[in-house]
Length: 347
Image (tube, rainbow, N blue to C red; front, side, top):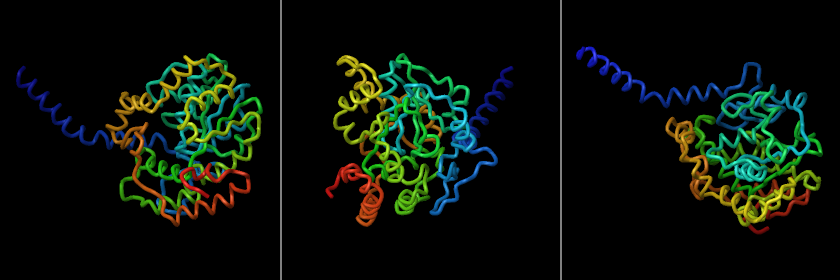
C-alpha cells in the first residue's frame, strides 16, 4: 500500500510540476479565445501597426467581443424604459467610477469588484465573453430601487446611440486629452488578456499615431467627444468633466443625483463618497477576481490603479501641437472651451 501511495504522490507531483508553470499560459489563451468574434464578423484592418485584432462594427473599430450581431439586436429589438441611465465615455475617462456613483444613487449596495458592478450596470454592446449579457438577460437588466436601469457604453453618438429616446438619460464624461492618451496606453499593456501586448511590442510613438488617427477601439477621442458635445444642450444629457469630478466629488454626486431624479441627503452623500473614493475602490484589487486575473497574467497590474501608477509616457511638444490643431478643427467650432481638452495648459 505504501509503495502505491508513494507512486500516486510522485505522479501528482510530476503533474503539478508540468501543469503549474503552464497554467497561466493555458488560462490566458482560453480567455483570449473566449473573447474572439464569431465567424462572419468583419475585422478591423489597422492603418497603423500593430494589429490588436479588433472588429469593425458599423464602421468603427471595436473590441473583439463587440459585434454587428449585437448592434443588430440593440437597433432592432432592445426595449427602452423611461428613466434608463446611460453612462457613456471614451475609454479611460472615469467610466467605472461614474457607473458606481449612479448604481449607489439608485439604491444598490456596495460592490466588491468591477465584475459585480457590471452585473448591475451592464455594457450592452458586449456580445461574448465574461462581461456579456445575453439579449434576454439584457432586456431584464436589474431594475434598481428607484425603478431605473443603468447601462454603460463607450460608443460615439451614432446609430443606436444617436437615437436614444428622450426618456433615457445620458451622463457623458470627458477628460483632458493627453491624460486620456496616457491612461489608455497603460490600459492596453495592463489588460494583456485582451490586447496581447508585451513591453516592446508597441512604442509610444506607434501608439500615439493609432490613437490620434482613430485606429483604436471606438475611433478618435476628439471625434468621440464631438459627437456627444453636439447633444450637450438636450435636457436628457449631462456633460461632466473628469477633472471637475476629481476636484469636487461631492458636487459631482449631487449633480448626478439631481439629473437622474434621486434624493441624496448629507448622510447618503457621505456614504457614496466613501464607497466611491479611490481608497475604497482600490480594495477591489484585493478580491479573488482581480487576484486571479493578475495571477494568471490576464492583467499585468491592478484594475483600479493608484495615482501615478499608469505606464509612464507623455506627449512630445509636436504631438501636443497636433492635438491642439485637432481641437481647433473639431471642437473649437462647436464652442468647447480650450481647457476642457487641455486642463493642464493655457491657450
